[in-house]
Image 1 (cartoon, rainbow, N blue to C red):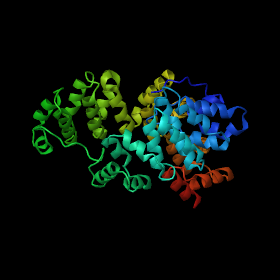
Image 2 (tube, rainbow, N blue to C red):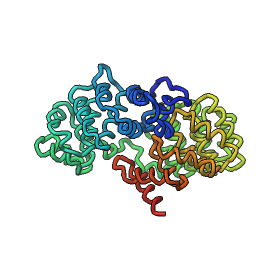
Image 3 (cartoon, helix red, strand yellow):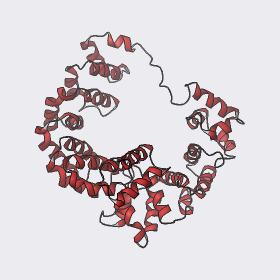
Image 4 (tube, rainbow, N blue to C red):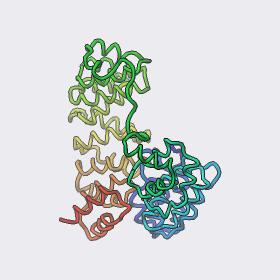
Length: 418
């Protein structure tokens, strides 16, 4: 998780950090906006880079504001450039896709000299243009072990990898392993030990429960999943027993198994929210996915508490649940979250909830969503936006932009047909 200070949502800087569409729309008319964009690229503002997108959003702003790619590339050559530099790699990659080919030179420089050399190589490979990666195969073979080569060869038809394989035997071998389906992470390791699938399915419920309680036994996770597959009521009791004690992979297995119980788990989930702290996250997940109108007050309470704490991750479940239940009382909080949350992962969920609970109110948010940093927000917005002249122009751009997510392009094309 990054810990960059987030500016007020009322400022252009704060809106750019959040990846809001309103910032992208107004930036061209604000003096100094370019410096703010570059600051966001240099100091990654995302709360969780694993699930939040900013690369294409900032790259489009670099193009629209006619900013140079040089300062972004310089960021990658600074001593100690670590995880924060990954956003610069993403932005440079998207700039190449937006026909700013000079950005490829910055990626090459990072590949040759930067701390994030592997990420830069991977970006150049995935761009699929052999000319941009020409000559880097010697560096790749010198620095990469076999596993890393297999990772780069994830697409056996990539023209960069195919060209390199023609002159580098190790890359050719990695490519062949990928084609055979045995390279990199294409196939999980074979299970070992006595607890194989057939034997687990043949065990009694009591035997599986005993196995699931063994903290140091690899078969515990498999036993939990088998109990979940059978929809065993006793797994609910086991969750009460184990979740408060374990914050590990066994706890995660319990959560995944019990999500499949659906409405059958609702009575226990309602009790957990009020009494069992260790089971609360699982309970909210169940209520969000399967709760009924009687659960709206509880979901509202959880959402209000999350907003007050600015715990945006904790707001995701209640947002989805209240949207699914079309809870109109949630609309003011949903509007607040849209503007204030620094966690852009929430916005497609907020927009979906708004379109279900207050379609007319949602229209202005859908317009803004066409410029949002999250591709899923843009996709939802494409379907919900009122069909004005401005919206039509934006839909045409989204449909024709080769850097845009394919699902967004397809949704825009479908919308323009009607």
